[in-house]
Amino acid sequence: MSIRTRFIILIGILSLIATVGIAVASYRFSVSNAVEEAKAKGHLVFDALQASRLYFKDHQRPRIMEMMDRNQFIPELISGFTLTRGVWNEFQKRNQDYQFKQATIDPLHSDNKADKYDLQIIEIFQQDPKKKLAEGTITKEGSQFYYFAQPIRISRGCLRCHGDPADAPKEQIERYGTEHGYNWEAGSIASAYVVYVPLAKALTKARQSAINLVLIGSSGVLLLMLIIWFFFSRYVVKPVTMLEKRATEISLGKNLSEPIVTPSRDEIGTLARAVDRLRISVDKMLKRFK
Image (cartoon, rainbow, N blue to C red; front, side):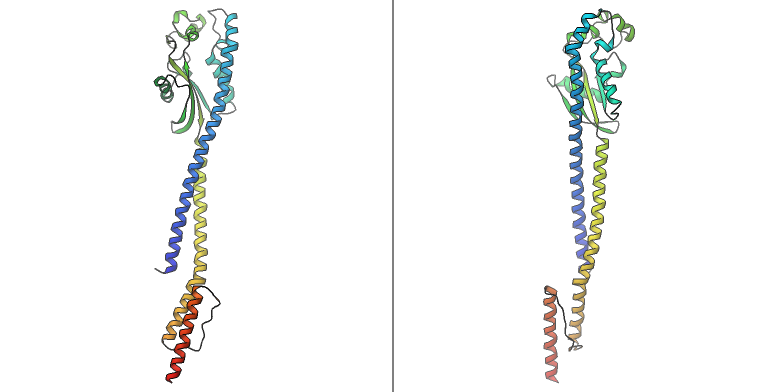
C-alpha cells in the first residue's frame, strides 16, 4: 500500500469519526433544546389552565352556589372539572397535538378515567403527598411526551358531589348514576391534572438534522479526500517518483548531463537538490576515470 493511499485512508477515518461525533453532539443538543422548549410551552399552558380554574373556584363558584338549589346540578356552572375540560377543548381546536386530562381513578364522567400512564403519575403524588407538581418525559403508545401534572386533593367541598351518593344532587344522580365517582375521602388524592406536550416532531427534526449533518459531513470528507489526493499526487508523489527515476538513472550512469531542476523550497526541493549534487559528483567521477 502506497504512502498516498495510507495517508488518504487515515484522513478519511479521522474525518468520519469527527463527523459522527459532531452529529451525535448535535442530536443530543437538539433533543435537549426540544425538551426545554416543550417544558416552556407546557408550563405556559398549564399555568393558563390553573389560572382559569382558580378564578372559578375562588370567585365564581361560591357566588353560583349561593344562587342554586342544592338538588340542582349544572356542570357548566358548578364543576371545576367541566370548566377546565371546556377551556381545554377550545384550546385544543387550535393546538391539536397537545393532550390534557383530568385523570381520575374513579370518575363520574368516563372521559376522565385514568389510563395506565395517568395512573403512574397519580401514584407519584400518592407516594409523596407533599409533592405539588410532577413533570418529565413519558412514552405513550410509542410516542414521547413531556408531561406536567398537579394533584387534585379532595376537599370537603368536593364531597357534596363525590361523597355519599345519598347527599349528591338529584340531577347529578339522574345523569351519571351512583356506580362511579362517589365515596371519595377528604384529603385523599383521587385525581390529577395532566398536560402532555408532544415531543415526536421535535425529536424527528433532531434526528433528521443529525442525519443531514452526517450526509453533508461525509460528502465534505469525500471532497476533501479527492482534493488531498490531487494535491498529494501533484506535489508529493509526482516529484518523489521523478526523483526515484533520476536516482536510478544516476546509479546506472545515464542522463548525467541533465540537471534536476525544481523550484520547490520545501523538503522535496531539498531532496531534489541533494540528488542533483549526487548527479554532479557521479558525473565528475566518471569523467575523471575516462
